[in-house]
Amino acid sequence: MKILILDDHTLFREGMKLLLTGLHPELVIHEAETMQAALASVEANSYDLVLLDLNLADTSGLETLSVVKLKLEGTPIIVLSAEQDPPTIYQAIEDGAMGFITKCATHQELLAAIKLILAGGIFLPREVTSTQQATAGKPLASGSETEILNALSDRQREVLKYLLQGKPNKTISANLHISENTVKAHLSAIFRALGARNRTEAVYFAARAGVPLD
Image 1 (cartoon, rainbow, N blue to C red):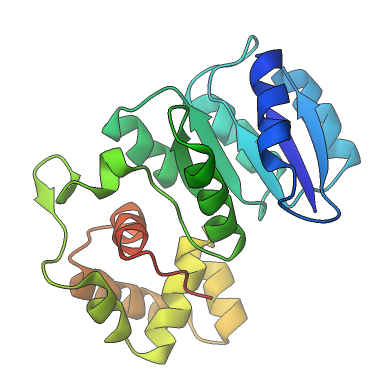
Image 2: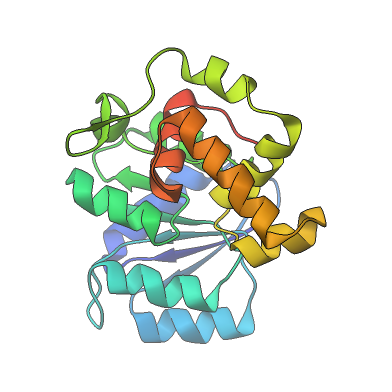
């Protein structure tokens, strides 16, 4: 397993390396402190996971995530940030992050989040999942999230799995051998069932349910 840690604080990177010891018997960790160094690293390596700080010396904010996501399509990205602002967390997921971990998280929370994401799930911090709203003023579906997910058809769960991986409709269509219009129809049904208006709200729902859709 190969992980890239992209953060401009040396002490934080060293601490993360210690915390990740034992995650995998063949774990290899690469480090980068600037976007320029990270891009050079991803040109020469493939990664199973990227741990990303949003604010670097040569880029900042969600632009950092967008650049890395573009270069590492299909690689799970976890945002590690001191930010605890729900709109920022929400937008990070909308932009393709598979998890958002605040830097006040415990060692156990960090490892649990990484394992969940590597298993195909999505992780969101307690600051978001403990609330009853995924967006300002927009409640998610009431009742048991797990029961609602289990009520989806097998095909709907397949579509949702790809959606949560950030796959576009065209890719979902090709992978499942169905038309894009059929994909859109399944997505509409899924969103209605979950009480979600878009992909990000569906991600919030699945994260709150704690169910990796493998």
